[in-house]
Length: 399
Image (cartoon, rainbow, N blue to C red; front, top):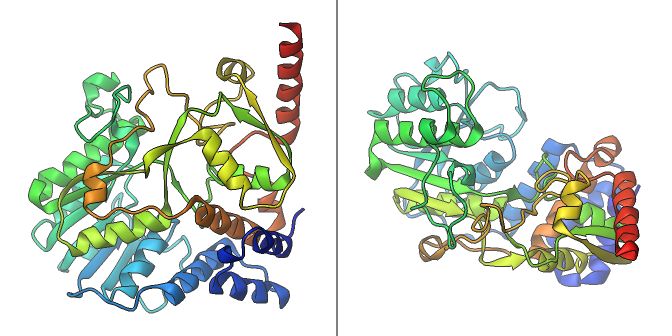
């Protein structure tokens, strides 16, 4: 198992500019014999960001209520809001990373059936980044519509019922009961439909001019426990022959969790409303550029073997699963990673470098316990990868 110390030494050798104060601090903690938990790794990244954050604070301090706030995207948002001088309250069940933010007000409840901690209270802005059930939004927005100025809802790119458009924009149709083939009132809803209905519930309660909706694509970076992007830096860092899907030309648009957090807080401070997509970079990055860019951050001896799209899929390597991040630009997904981000960029959305994201992701990964490092939740395992590569070579020889 590659140690975190060895990774940090390798990235420093590959490019000293990637070594930040936070990385060196983490290296010192590791040298002292400490192993960071996933939650502590989030806090360590927050320490690093605080140390490099701009000293300026928001012109107006806002009272912010986060519904959730302690799992992956939430801590990045909360930390940036605090660094900008805002007053923060967290509402959740108190079960995930409860030790984070000891100085922040914590309200305990359950979005299914217990919102009592929110009753009789007021905030400037509600930031809802935990709702996967439209009924949760209906209840929370309904309760808070007269005591809060605005409602911010973190939705998803999955709300789009048609991703064949090139370019994609917020004008594309979203899922409805009819288009999803689901009866109104059904208990189990597809994810995209659930989020689309939740968006509308927020607008129904607060009105369009008081509702801000974000539709992120795949959110990546430090703190991500899904490993949907992490697979590629880890696999490439391991070295050897890497199975790469397609021709390398399929476009990719993803978003670093830190870029999203900073833009969300900036949009809240600006009093914005409306609906925005959150992916990047502005010009879609080809899959080959993504993989070669990740390789540039490591010193691993790595080669890529590009396997035909149909061959990979027929071999059981599914896009966005065994081969995460990658989605072929065909069969109705031509616009999946071809979003026109002109409105978002004009509103201040920016994108950090792939090198920064890769280094931070690997640092987070190597901070996790060894058994967790060995059990990625996305990607293809080494044995199956080698089997498909062997089959691909045999197929090519037989042609």
